[in-house]
Image (cartoon, rainbow, N blue to C red; front, side, top):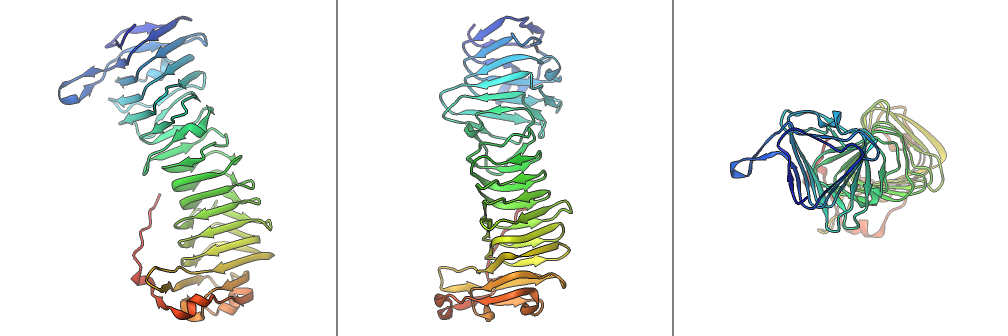
Length: 363
């Protein structure tokens, strides 16, 4: 077949193969580029069912088509777009396999679906990459997830329990099932940890980081380009190995949960606010308040607010005391205090927090 426009009725594969050498459209085109939905049904019920689409797969449905597409394989060379006219959920079974095998970049889009388009098992074979233009939830296995890319400001909810092979992901990533990293990961937006995450000796970086479940560095390195938050009572961050490194370019805001600072190196360049968080420390851990520097020859004054009763192990200050504002006696905040003054800082003036424009994004 060339392009196929299915406006209604049932197309039953029944252990056969359907080859479409164009686009497969389950929608009606209206004037001015708008569309309207159909009640078209593609019935796939056997693992032998196979649909090949050489172009794009475009769906505008008024019904839940996942009730009819249960098993088999759909191979797509072009883009895929879902339009839910009645905002129906489309949660496909892992028995339905989506193969993305194009040569040019492929894009998955959805409209009026919330996060509720959950594809079945995905096999990614496109070296040019598969881009998620909108929010997406992944609950089923993904083969070749290193080819998956996000969009700035959009969310990927990772729920399949696999370690994502995402070398770099442009959007926000929500960890919603236990994950142990098997390679380095760079998140261009926010990383939100809502299930246990083990860094497992790898490098992890993100703009903002929200710790709402267990995060274990486990000999790895975490770099936060903006702010880190512990804002859920289930959240805990554990540093218990000598090689553990956590670098926060922005602020550390810990309002609840647990900080296990037992070993390794924590470096914070922004403000510190630790309130109702439990903090456990060990003799092998060092916290460094290294401040920020600007191109105008100024240094940022760090505000450090730590609840009474909380103590760091070794605390290192890299600037003169005038460059810090502590809410209580700094000697009482730690077991050991070290002034490791950087030479350049003695020649520049301080810049107050209100002189710096910052923007914090909340998830």
